[in-house]
Image 1: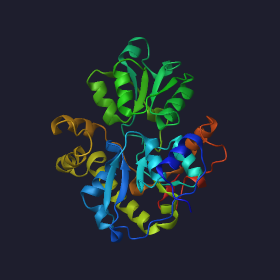
Image 2: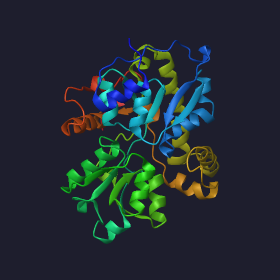
Image 3: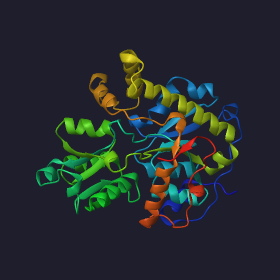
Image 4: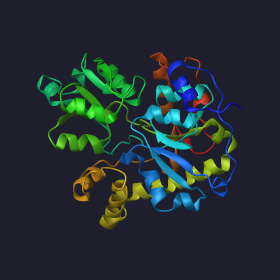
Length: 343
């Protein structure tokens, strides 16, 4: 098979150039002195990877893991396709689906989810837009809504919210989460939706207003997934299964400490210390802690995957003509590594 390089992967994202996925790695990776690179964002929602690394779960599984950080979902999909990254956690995007269609990547499990009873992602309005009447999602019609790229998860959320309210916003691609935050704070865009560890501090500081919850419109949304190259999923079952097992142990620790609070204050504080090594690193611990604590959402136990949510996302991307109508769930998902469910 033909190996992906970065130029080929970027070509697939931008122009749909056909290419085959790279061949599998020889296992075990650690025996070949080769690092396993895991992609992540500096969000609390990626904490399962942080915990698995810091508490030695990856090492126990024989994986010499290095984290590589990104600022948006679609570049992470490119990195998987080009083999710069082996495994990653990110939202489903149009770029990810298109690469899956070309045989480059596969979703292999679930990560962050909206769950009834857990305070999840928020819908935000700029202060200027709020003062001008954008006090609920019902007033989103023709308002500017920040997204990283067309076909991103932000685009999906904003469109589903707008359709439910009969008030479709206008989407403005700004490439990076930081750029969206800056635009919202300076009234250059009107609205956005984002995880609570970002939304709540912005609102608490008076920089934006919270006008709704994503869960009111997408109550069981599979916000992020774990994914890898098609070659790893098909040919490296041992390494891939070990990654999922270690990731799942990290998720279980995180949920116990931060969501279920079964480990008491000591357990929660220890987890905050761990997560703070990767999230809000520019803030002292005492200022970062409230955002880390208040922004906790559940990461799926055992990396279980909500197939109903993934199917809804795929169908939305197809309905918007952001991906090819011929893409199937089998193209997108390798469901052999985790338990799947419909919700």
